[in-house]
Length: 521
Image (cartoon, rainbow, N blue to C red; front, top):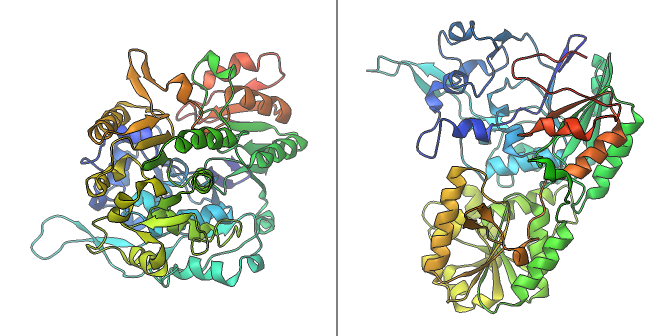
């Protein structure tokens, strides 16, 4: 978005769909090629001046000058980050480090927790990175990408919903050093309140909303044409639906010129005729499924969905079980608790234990070792689960099932699936493998999609175990009509055209974006 010489990006995310067109698990963009691969495969826009200079191989931009999308940018004021999912944040690592990222404090902390406890790939280096250079090592004829620093560079994150003095010493220390100095010298957490940006003729509003990850927000930007509202991802059926309702009310009061709105749950015309499952429904249906079993239970739900984790924690309490989370879950809970004290303290929560994987003693990362040390009286092993399976709910996904040979679960164990159906061929293959694992170990399942002639479907009696992170069609239309912008721009949707008939006669003009074309207000 550009206005009176100011430039903003509304998120800067990783395209899962675009990436899967060319890459898979063993065919990845070459880290040593810097910007070349994502630019050549049209996964990044060819905007010279936007990206980290040390990732530019010699002669890079001459190759893309003829691209219809090529443009030279001499400055970008900020990225307005709506939340910490990688499809909104995953290409921030390529950006110049002097471009500030404005987000809620929780979003910034979740992004850091994911990076601290995650892989070292580009899409994880959202908060800090180690610079590289290109040189000719002895005996080589071609350039190689080499690290030239042992110190990470901190990206400028500016929390939009908290004043600097309200962060607290412990939270500030975490940002600068990590819990155990894993990122020592990482850098200062720049706490510039939104009022600072008004000095640059850039008036912004940050609206907290409900989504399947904590810290999500929508944005308002005052332009010379009026207020522009960007919804990010949001819903009206989660535990924090009041946040989204307040956003709708506040956004409407601005009489916006335009509303840029998501449409993830728009699939066909029937998308407007049914609602979404609420998180309370998930609790009730999950409790019904777990209460009927007397063996091991595995709960499979989206990573980083703390609300879902807390739902299954309550189910564990109500069924006299322990919720066995993984070290990454523990790190995330420990992080978010710095800003939201109502999040359970693992050390004091009787219903939570931490599952240590069978191979975890083979050179675990420092953060993982420290999790085991700090919560050593909370650690459970495969043998503990095997000896008393009826006492546990394991927070496992498909990618954790290789622990089952060590656990050797008894026949009749239960796999509770609390996530979305497969969306592409690659996920369908994983689902077939998942069914083979469960069949091999004689698991029953609840809420797990089955492959039928009509596609992957959940049995009617087992529906209601997943609350989507996105508003349903009828909620999106209500949202648009209450906010009542002059222009509605649908994005983040496979079928943005579905907004057209639903808003006909509403006085709202729907403009569909086209790749490479400018929308001028």
